[in-house]
Image (tube, rainbow, N blue to C red; front, side, top):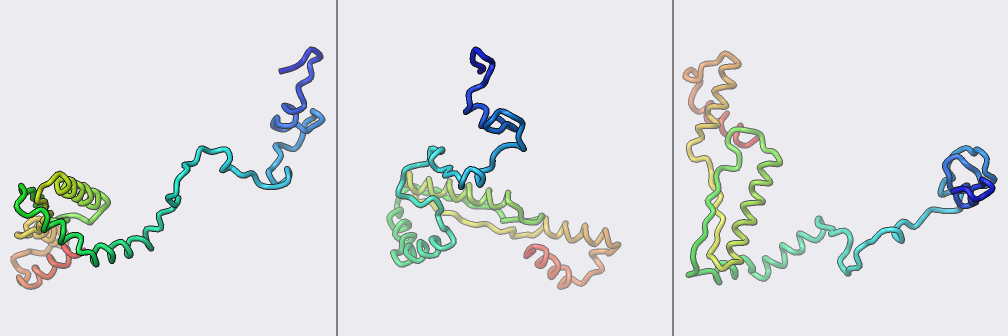
Length: 172
């Protein structure tokens, strides 16, 4: 980068870390404020050219969309239009039977919803049927584990109390 005399061009000297305009050691890089203002970074990025807003504002938008779809009776129209077409039913299992709810549960439900809706768009009479843990056995096992940890005998606990604890566990 040096010319024949060994000097560097002024622009390199001015922008080199720790160098001032005269080529000597400075206090460090020059800040945006010292250069006389902030830099407009939008001119350095390839941002999309679109009429869509950069932020969706979903907390404000979603209630309006749901109201509109409800007023149009959109879901009812979709169900009516699908009558007589080949059936596709996704019968889902319980939302959570024996563990605390976590992001995996949400992902599971979202993916199943996508499958059902895509089948609807492919021309099927598609329905999502949420299932529930009819027998509660995994939940009962969890309560029994808690009893064992506390040294309690499940058979000595009144059945109404046991059921109440199972319901409370399922509702957590």
